Image (cartoon, rainbow, N blue to C red):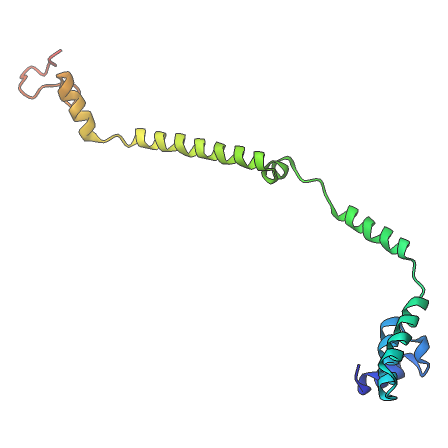
Length: 143
């Protein structure tokens, strides 16, 4: 705390430093002791005494903190719990991998290469255009 801040707080809270709010009071007492060139141990002793005499209910503070923690925690959804567990994450990853593999096979099947169809037709003895042989004048297949 600087001297200007001390003066500002003195105008705001009054001349009695002991009546100021705790953080400002401790800083003001430390500043006043430092300006008097007191023993640094005496300043520390004064701050420890001030902190010990401060009113506060630690149990009530702990209850408030725990209440806020419990109020803020929500039960995650099924999917979130599944993804957060290692086994669930592995299962989801495996399911995505299987789905991607199946989708890849489906896309590959739809994009059949015409040269494969022609080779299959040649191997089976029929033509690639539905079984009509170009040399057949009647248009009948060679079945």
